[in-house]
Image (cartoon, rainbow, N blue to C red; front, side, top):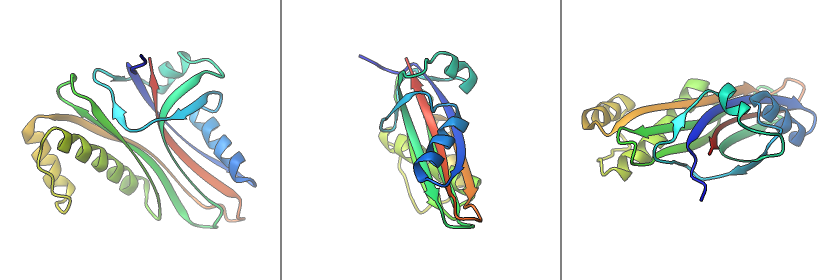
Length: 181
């Protein structure tokens, strides 16, 4: 049974005449193009610890099958703002699982897309822990409630945004949470 023990975050952007090639270039920029990536859903396993991408990449070999939560977005529309983000929510009790969320959008800045992804992960974790959740309340109110509860210890996100190429080339953004044994 494979249960990830470590996780690291990556991001990248690529531009090319072909959409697939722009995706490949974004993966290269993120440092994960040389792996066979398998997208998984959004559970951060109990006791899984975050490590730097530099340390995590040293543990992998080219061609290796690597599990990740991946968010990507692409456009060939000149001037169009695109974003991809992965949010992370880690419970205080490390015996409990946390959440990872993917968000990809148009017209959102890094901070807006990142906060949204982080908020989604925190909401999934909060509701799995039995906390009340009002989707209409603002982030400060939710953060205060979750802090008071003492059940959520940390949230964060990795986000990549880019503006569509002025000459109509494909632009792809990716973010990912790479899961390691």
